[in-house]
Image 1 (cartoon, rainbow, N blue to C red):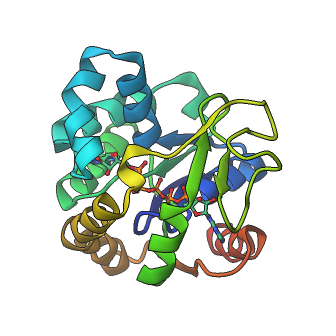
Image 2 (cartoon, protein in one colour):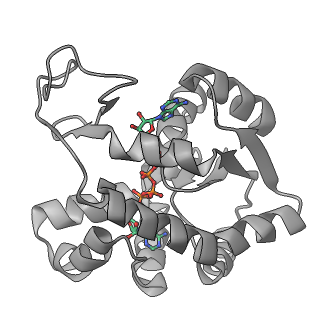
Length: 213
Ligand code: AP5
């Protein structure tokens, strides 16, 4: 399986990509996770991208494209991969086509998760993430048993810097202007697999899995 996950911030791309990984055994490649990890580790890449992430702006195309090109060449991607958060611009989509063609690979589909804007803001402003294992919670819809503590690994829960209300609005604007055309691109080539993102995670997963099999 080789698919890309597209959709606005908070649509559930990461949540559903993890479920697809479990079901189909493909590697989960999240550009957001890779960039945040570089930022946390203080690598040169992390220093370079810090202000883009914190301000909710897109990291330059060449930086993320190089990351993805290297990542999908790794052994765990041989059996397939789920790209979460890439491509986000038309230039990135074209670069992905070239990278895959050079590897004699083709895309099976672009999963597009549709969620209304008010729900996106609600999900993102209440999201908390575990520093230890990356598990996700929501302060109202999916709270941890003990506030601030991960129920899986006892790690500390934190709020992403870009999940503050003003930055969420900026990310949604950037999504509409930069990533909207990517959705239309995949629609025009017949690869778009649109799924209603409302309902429980399992309900949403059922719709997505039915569309990519
Ligand atoms: P990235 O990490 O990719 O963020 P995003 O696209 O804004 O997506 P999110 O992670 O916020 O949301 P999601 O759709 O994965 O939803 P999730 O499953 O977490 O990118 C961050 C930044 O990195 C960008 O702003 C940019 O700066 C940079 N970047 C990354 N890729 C780039 C690229 N290609 N080019 C340039 N720059 C790039 O779910 C959200 C919340 O909802 C969670 O709390 C979850 O528990 C909850 N939830 C999920 N499903 C449900 C459900 N069915 N019902 C109720 N709650 C749910």
